[in-house]
Image 1 (spheres, rainbow, N blue to C red):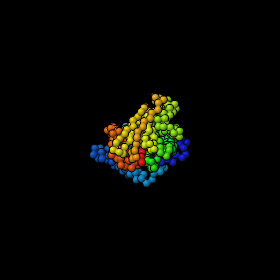
Image 2: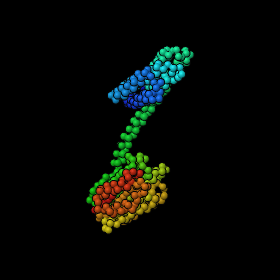
Image 3: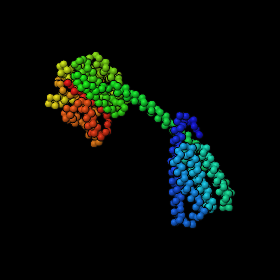
Image 4: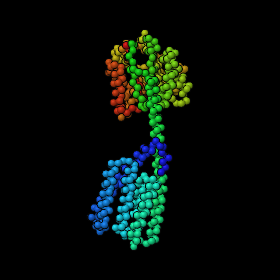
Length: 444
């Protein structure tokens, strides 16, 4: 047995797997044997009474009882050694039944030659995961019993037929051993490869969990401040995604915030998120206005990632509480929503240019300005919200989002995000296709 193929630490698992395979197949063979013996008796009594004689009954009854006992025993012990013992008993039983059939009807040997014995041998050897050595032992057992049958029925069979059949059986035993050797090596290689993949997958999963924790650490947390309450909801499709947000009080009465959505999902998008996070941190420290910050970020993306096919949309805003002005810049991002508390009206902050990374209009600075009052609410989101699909492939859409914003304007921002997330999940029947990010800001 090529034990060196499987690492020592996995040999116990390999034995358990072999034990299960033996257990399943021997049980299957036992059920087939019980069915076959029962069918033989029924057909013999109804259609073939002349062929079924008293001499056949010991083999039939013994085979049925032995199969039942093997089934019962298989439930009590599950070790590989015991399962192999069951398999050996069943194999020897199968071969002995062929011997008994030939002894009871010597004329069978004359007309069918080695057919019965070969059938018993190949059935018991090729359909079970034996080693080549175990298959050889079964072959020797078969050969000895086959020779005994011919000696018992010598008056019916010539010496030439005996010699030819012995050669045929010897070849069958040799072929069976070679096949089981190759099968054993392939089985062990397959198991070893599978375990290697499992180990690598476990390492990768652990690394992804660590990366997920690091990536999650970049995302802001919901807070309650003197000037505003801010609720954050982030729901990536995979471990991590390409959505990003940050907010920062740059002064006692100024709140800067940014929301970005990188094309794609998963690790590659998350790696770019980590990179642009550093760039955004630098820009915020320089107190850049929203338009200047996004222009700087666009230049950075074009220069460092332009050839890699990464693109992103971004929305950046600055709430100036001293002048009640909102300055914003929108690079290809969906129209963001300002819900005015007075009249419960919606103001849409439309994109002013294309998404980042395509190298167009890199020299321009885009800034828009809108007034806001105490109690107004900003609803910032990525396209995973409006482009969520239901089973009919209908989009959640901007209008549903606007209606939801109006109808739930009295909710606390945290409850608002939670309720909106539930609404989207129910709409798309829990089938999420894109990362979802919600950043809701309630001015005070």
